[in-house]
Image (tube, rainbow, N blue to C red; front, side, top):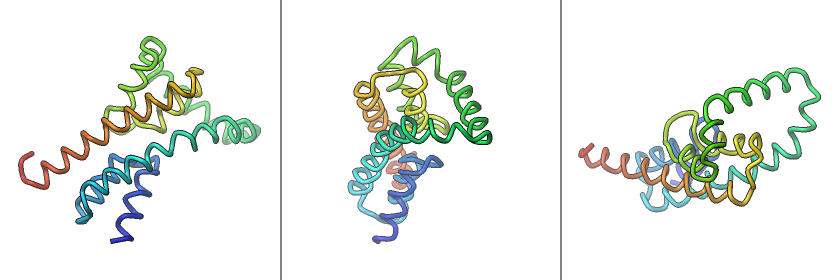
Length: 152
């Protein structure tokens, strides 16, 4: 049980799944559905301050290396093409909706990068990311629950 909780939380912290994978993993492995939601949601929310620290402190240092700089520029281009116009046009609500959609490529990692690139105020961005993560987690949680019951 503890092992499955840890794995669900790690999925929620991971850029490869976030809570979109952590919640179904925990629920499908027989964990308490409410505990899974709360733990995975808060683990996913924790990503924003960690990413902002990384982008503000570590990114500047790592940009000195050519291979990192090339990868960072590629990620920045994709972020600007994928979400840039919506976030710049709609601000808080654009960021919230972008993070809320539970599909690959959206979520708190992309929202954090967009916050950094578009110079969104951190408090507003944290709230937008947190609310977006909440609604995304609810969508995933309800969909998983309905699927487990054989309804969806």
